[in-house]
Length: 221
Ligand code: IYR
Image 1 (cartoon, rainbow, N blue to C red):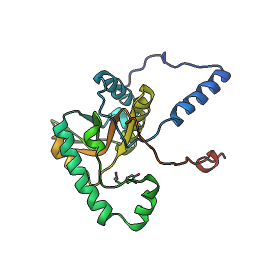
Image 2: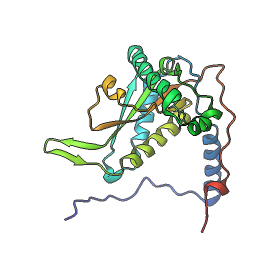
Image 3: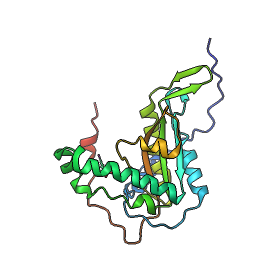
């Protein structure tokens, strides 16, 4: 027996085709301005802005609407320092031993290395956890399409922060188990990525990179 309850769809908004075209183009322009930033300012950012963007992320579709994400917003300088130390330890391993020569060659255009000063400098690190399974009083219960769900929520979060006027960096130290320890998150939550959030430094630079053309990313049949 279904327990589904329905209400009329009142939030949907249709636009005339010309207005749709304009909206699609202007959103594309807005999103095209987004760059992943590695040079951050330490200027403070009001908490309310981050809260609104997290609530936007929380609107993401998810497997069975189970919303298998948890966002830890790190502001405390001492915790940021611990995260930087943990990440740089893994990154040194990565850059000197773990990464294959091919991987390092693919990363060369980004100019990254094992030093992660932004983890100290930026006002917020949003550590995104994926809830691999639920822990209920009756025991473990599955979540569904966890990576897809958390990936979509993360995408919305990045877009929301950009739209609000903030810069982000998707940072993926690997392995990330140290984040559970530092942030006291339970074992059923797996670190997904670290989103560094703040204003760019005044002298921030970004690498010269391109995005693929439509023909390369899409096929019409
Ligand atoms: N996690 C490392 C390496 C790295 C890997 C990929 I794939 C990137 O797109 C960027 C960096 C680091 O953060 O430096």
